[in-house]
Image (cartoon, rainbow, N blue to C red; front, side, top):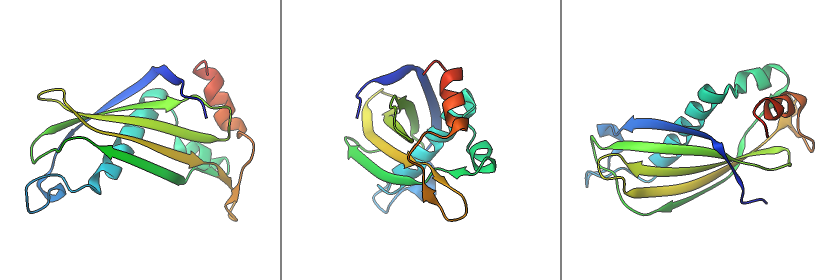
Length: 144
């Protein structure tokens, strides 16, 4: 697995922490960070036209098969989280995203994470061992 990142392909999602995301102590419950990663991927897809529905319509889905998270600090109600999302460059038939979440008010690192998604095809959801053409075309379009 390469540690190189498509540094030119960076998207930032800005999320205001909602009341329902906090625990009784007033801090963001750890499970909500998965949703923040999803919002980061959505921002990335919107910015770089990586359309999951287009892939789905061409016969592929991209389920998450791995998730890792390192918590450094907490977020609280009304804080603004900045979710920086980059795609890791890999020749394999998978999508690897790296996330850095910072607190907008002080720039402090709150959380780092990674998700890995694979391509599955058809109604049988069979694992694709080769990069689907729709994703290979997207990579070429973005200089990857």
